[in-house]
Length: 403
Image (tube, rainbow, N blue to C red):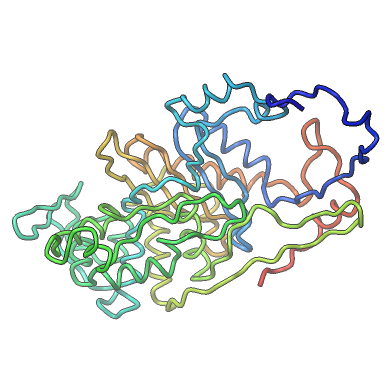
């Protein structure tokens, strides 16, 4: 082959040619109907959707939008094609699902609730009176609404900023940061596609390095308490966070590959992934999960647009401030509430309110999966050839639990 990847002849007239051998097949965890549906919902948007199987951490769908036609990289990719993709200002080659680092906004409020409850800083009944703003020194931190007397469950349900401003001042930076670290923020998730950003999780040590010990004050804390400021996350991390809350602290390593089929040996090798538990009290889990359930299911919640008829789901909206343009819309959620099967995180860039733009995408994805989920064996068709018998049988069999 020449330097342009073009075949120009056979070496030694083929005397040393080796016969082609089949490679190994990767058996994926994905629900291809859901993947296609999620892609269609994000077709005119910038952002990402991640849907995880809460029982094992398998990726059901993962989209990054705008995207590109994979066939462009089949065979020889023309130089002009590569240059055009790299010059595209919408950045289609950038995986927004695993590589972005945006503030999570109000979707992060449950981290603060867990930190407060697990460290016995407050009880679930601790209340504040929200008048629409909160002052720290000479700075006023605002809320979108006046919520009146508000306890923790109501604060999650109605996304009361004033409640979480004051709660963050009581909890402090490092207990909050330590709790977020338990959920996996600030580090790589270990996903098997090996393409991810660890995000950013500030602590006292980090703030001292960045600003100097006298360069920052407690006035930085209220913004962090509502998921703004220095904290940065990926949609993948947020989906794992939703899975952890759904599972009351059980976290499965996210993965796309379920098993490997070796054709030469006619053998399937199952891949095992790690499962860990975040130590959380039953009380904390119930308070947070009930608040998230009310977000979707009860009057006064912020996201009725994510409701699924006949199925209770839970979630949390977020609207992350963006200094370079319109706000980013976030949503994290899971369903059904009592026996979760799917956890979802949605990021829509520069869209505005999470409840108006990200939540409907998440709700429709969860509904599509729960009502129209593909069977264990992927459907066959022009783009999905019939699987070998042992592969189909393995997919149809109950999945072994990871370790």
